[in-house]
Length: 192
Length: 269
Image 1 (tube, rainbow over the protein chains, first blue to last red):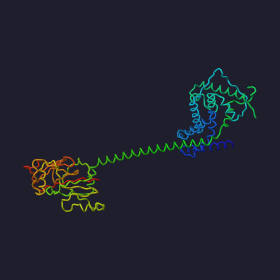
Image 2: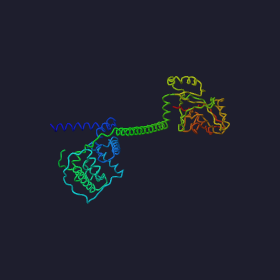
Image 3: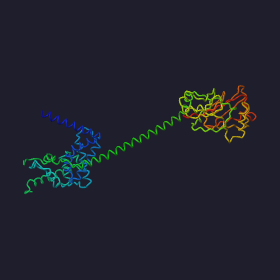
Image 4: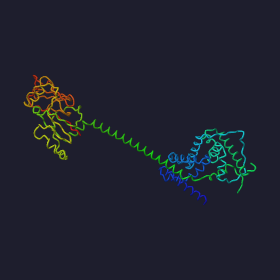
């Protein structure tokens, strides 16, 4: 029963998604707005992890959605529609980071430690997440976002960012360590 | 607050959605403006493409029509000739009474049109066709050569068909005026000295006929029944024909019988 309901929901979602894609292909303004309203909050949240300034996030949102709506013909329909859009948004964000020249990789091999399982809160408020991310250098943050939250492989990250796979790996370890420190500090400020 | 052991990556994955937030309305407004601009650009470029395609099509079509007309003008002339079934009326050279310059507005170039021979067609147009065009009927009635051969015009399908007397070129020898004598002395002598007689027509001449037996593309040969007398007329260009001097005897164009010279202008259509 549970499986049936899940399947029904999945199929309904697919149908709605197909309608939205069709509307985008027809360049129908209402359909475009519907897509925007459905996905804008998710992408806004995603972009907040990459970019600090609201103006930048809005600019990237506009450029990203514009590309999605005008290049919908390039979406083959085989993979996930949201995944396709998400990738466009991430690329736009990375382009802006490159443009602003704050996309630097900090690699300090001596600082790399193998992470261990940490004991931490399993709930983080939105502001906490933002605070933690904002304290990471751009390079750490970007690799962390791409690997942990977008699900890219190190090989893909290396390709996207134009760095080596090892750099991507080290950036992630450093980000993770820094993050742990920050969380510990947050949880037990007196010991930090 | 619940605490438990958790990998940091999972912690972020689990809580990342908390950052989701509807952007301010201005973001959509800006996006919409950008999309509208793009739509305008696209429609302009579509219009441009359509315009260019239409122009090209028109050019090709125009070229095709012109080429078609050019290629088939002679055939079209023949076709018209067959459809109208009009005939050239005989015009007796010796009875030519008009040297008026007649300007006919539209002619085709029929330089390549051979001079024909044989039984001549009359220039009087098909009456049924004329009757179908009331506007032309009046002109036709007024101008139609009736029983005599001295009218200079016929009206066919909205164009003047000129059949008039010979108008000699000014540069031709003075004796050309003797052609007038032909008028006065039918079918006997035309004093044209030893010069070729240049026949200068005002319009492009489609065909020139003699009641002859022989001809080739550019020459007409009148041959009397006894074969003693010959009259050769050669096409020079569209509207010039020469009566060759070897047609003359003792400086005179001597015709021992009535020679019919028929010439036909081109119907434009």
